[in-house]
Image 1 (tube, rainbow, N blue to C red):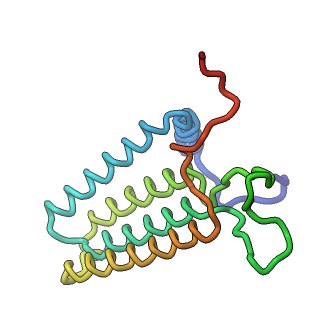
Image 2 (image 1 turned 135 degrees about the vertical axis):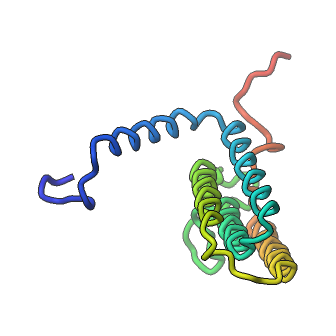
Amino acid sequence: MNAGTTDGPPKSPLLQQQLHRLQQLLDQSIPFVLYRWLALLALLIIYGLRVFWIQGFYVVTYALGIYNLNLLLGFLTPLHLPDPDADGPSLPTKSNDEFRPFVRKLPEYKAWFASSKAFCIAFLATLFPVFDVPVFWPILVLYWCVLFFVTMKRQIAHMVKYKYVPFSFGKKKYGKNRGG
């Protein structure tokens, strides 16, 4: 960073210390994938109970669902999409082709962090009545389900067309010696 440039208003030392501590906690949480996702599940349950308890904020919840669907699509999509018309690099189609690992457009940690932030922001939005827009919520649920199934159908068709699997469980693992 250049000495003459600033990234915004100056931050107080206490705020900088708290932001640094938060970043340390986030950095330490990286290896604990299961616990991070369980914490997100806890956030989801707390948010769901809050919305159920106050019987409102369905538009906020719908926006949260759309945002998380977008994150899921980024998580399932490869970083470099193969172009069938291009003569450049593509995914291997034969067993003797070069192996190229699946690299996600949105890595797991970034998907978790973005979703966690979204749930926290949505929870904060439920504290302000201005965001409680009256709406017939079954229509939103139906529309979200239709959107989810149409989007996933398209994503699965894309996976089949380009022969990639975005998950590592169930795949063969090479290079590990198993006693035998």
